[in-house]
Length: 90
Figure 1 (tube, one colour):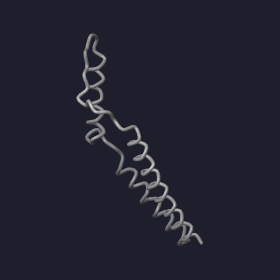
Figure 2 (tube, one colour; figure 1 turned 90 degrees about the vertical axis):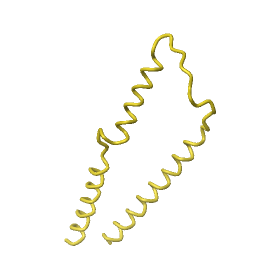
Figure 3 (cartoon, rainbow, N blue to C red; figure 1 turned 90 degrees about the horizontal axis):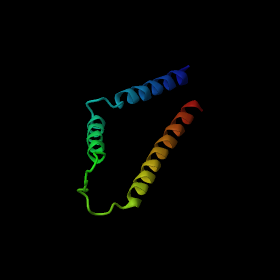
């Protein structure tokens, strides 16, 4: 019974974290969405000679290395979490 209660408590903390991390319209994601909408309107205007403010080239491997690092962090977190849960259940 103790294990079930502890698992329920862990589940509740996860759900509270998900709810707390849910983006709202006032967060940076809302601001980013507005900026993207403005940008799309600007570049789709007919006869528009859009010039980028970033003349240097973007390193395509930058996003790959960031994604791999993020993936490793997430995998490590879940591995640790599953080990803790397995230890509790055993």
